[in-house]
Structure formats: C-alpha cells, structure tokens
Image 1 (tube, helix red, strand yellow):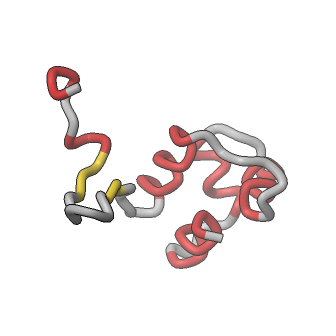
Image 2 (tube, rainbow, N blue to C red):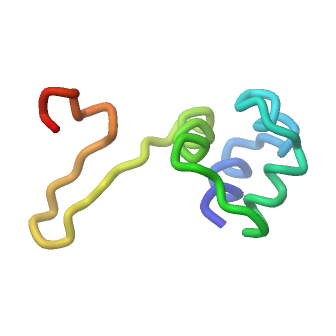
Length: 75
C-alpha cells in the first residue's frame, strides 16, 4: 500500500518506477499487491525516486534517523 501511495502521489506509473529501479513492471505490481516482498534496498530506491525518505523511529525515545545518517564508524 505504501509503495503504491508514494508512486501515485507523484503521478508515476508502474512502468515509470520499473525503469528507474531496473525491475519488470510486473514486479512493481506484485510489490503493490503484496504477492512478493521488496527488499529494503528496493524500498529505499522507490522512496527516493518518489521524493520520500525512509526513517527509523525508536518508539521509546522518539529518536529518528535515516540509513544515510549512519556512518560506518557509528556501528
């Protein structure tokens, strides 16, 4: 649902997204109908293409960060 929401809010077709992230259009359809699950990498690519960031939010502390906020030495 989220992937379809991001795509449609930006008026992208499934074909548009598939060309950018280099997967078949049918694969995008299967992600949206939850027939198959995208990898986290694919989710990030679709979000980035649609102008969204993926955040992790700690429910206890409300700390929020993106994958790009973490540098290798922090791990």
